[in-house]
Image (cartoon, rainbow, N blue to C red; front, side, top):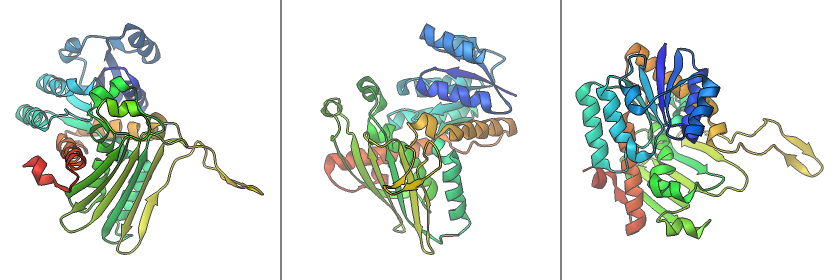
Length: 333
């Protein structure tokens, strides 16, 4: 049984708390949450202890932690808990600065720590079936990947201020999926971005609508389309085109039924947002982490995956700024 401490019980923290509660071999032992009312609510729901971050770090009854605190705290907490001998699962990104990410990963390596990054889309059952079809050679060599990721609405402006912006916060998931599906690492990035849904987002230095085209050294391509406003729900789709055919993963609706009548075809709406769309993925992700910690094997999504995805986000930002294609080597050196 892996005994978990959860750091932060905001929206994503509560998602992970529920995932831990559903996974065999995982036990939600303690929570660190500064908002008293939220902490008491989570304690009442899951029966966990309430402790400070430092208390969790020194607790003998904690084997692993899930870091769900604001981004600017992630690197320090990863280092603290790896040094304390705890396995660490951290929400992306490790930090908004590549040099700080590298320094953090050096500490993880130095102390022999276990670090898994939260890229839950790799653990979605439909996306896994799509990946399995690719790996089985059913569509031949991968030539083009198309990723559609559209949120139903923008986050609060104070969240945007701390998140690092659309590329580091939202598109970063698509960057990770692109790396997962493409036959080799991305070599070059071209991006364009606009403010189309809310001028206040632009006032806070961010974009709400973006498109990215990426290319590998052999010429395989990936296109990503993002927006913070999809009036019809949470839009998550993948299509992969190969030399022998294509494979796609469609949207998930509230019910998998289609009604046909004289007025046409009708379906229930899409799921609301990531908390409901990726419920199974979050549980599968924690299960994979538990398996890695138990078996003392490398986790499936690592700090290096986080570093590469952040580098792609930096390349996209530079591409928007300078209106040109940016080589990943310019970012990583």
